[in-house]
Image 1 (tube, rainbow over the protein chains, first blue to last red):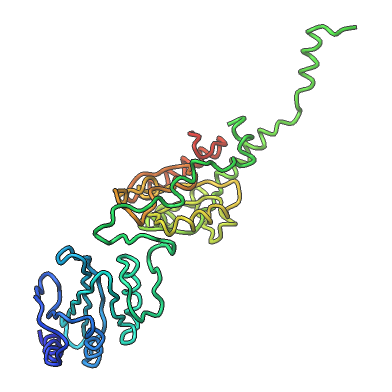
Image 2: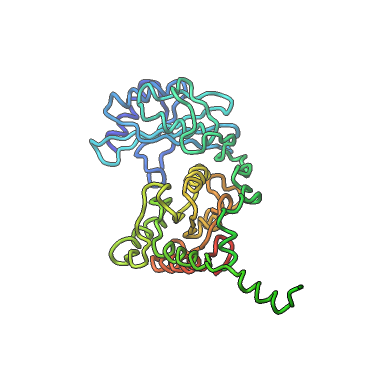
Amino acid sequence: MGRASDLAAALDSGGLTSAAPTEQAFTGAADSRWVHPAHLVAAARAAKDAGFFYESMTCVDRLDPHGVFELVTTFSTYEEPGSRLALRTWIPKDAEAPSLTPVFGIAEWNEREAWEFFGLRFAGHPNLTWLLLPEDTEFRPLLKSFTAPPPSQFDDSLNTPAPAPADDAQHAQHG
Amino acid sequence: MRPTDHELDLLAEDAAPFVRLAMVQDVLNLARANSLWPLTFGLACCAIEMMAVGMAKYDLDRFGAAVFRPSPRQADLMILAGTISRKMAPVIKTLWDQMPEPKWSIAMGGCTISGGPFKYPGEYAISEGAEKFMRVDVHIPGCPPRPEALIAGILKLEEKIKQGRRFGQSV
């Protein structure tokens, strides 16, 4: 579709991206591009200059190839309905991903989410901390290797009953 | 001279209290049952049904239980309406501890009873029921329960309060 494909072509000619499979019916993206992690920030800046806004970023714990996170960042524009461009990046699990916060401030929350659910760190993120999960969460629940969380501190707190209220005995007498 | 057994019985009858405080408790319980003040808070979709119960069509005021209070200090009924996430559980526990005695609680819907549809192996975000961390007087099953079910639950609770029963004690 028009604008997304134009942007993708511009990114390709700039040497930032290469064609990726686009299945619009499944992905909702009008065009899709592979981008090297080192070029992700430059590609995002080019998208912003072309009038696109940052829509979303999701992380995938890939089984094939093993040991890789796939980051899918989508950009869109109000100028033309349906013109959504997806940028796909592969990040090795032991590496840090580039943060898009210098270009799009709203990327901060998506990256915090990816960090808390997958443990993927973002280089240059201003506040990489928990967003949705409790602040003391140690586990990474969306990793494929995750099985079950440790019991919460509340799970058994009723097995040691609190002292009965003072007027309870009075109630029980004639109740 | 040593009193006879009959005289001792008469003395024991005289020693019986003139004031029976149990009657006062009954009157107090009647007042409590008919002026429940629920805490204003909802957790998920059950809260929508709870709000509907407060509105004109179902009119919870008929049962004296529609004075929703915004502060736990003023409330004596906690209606747990919705999914309890692990992140929210400590907050609910704090609110419950802040409510003055006597206080009662209603677990509304499957989530607050057992975790409901969120109870499965590996669940990391949802607490499996309110009774993991606090005591509950009345359970109302449903997903979400109809407004009539909540009214039935509140009437059941009022029955319980009138009899001076609490938490695990059934009516």
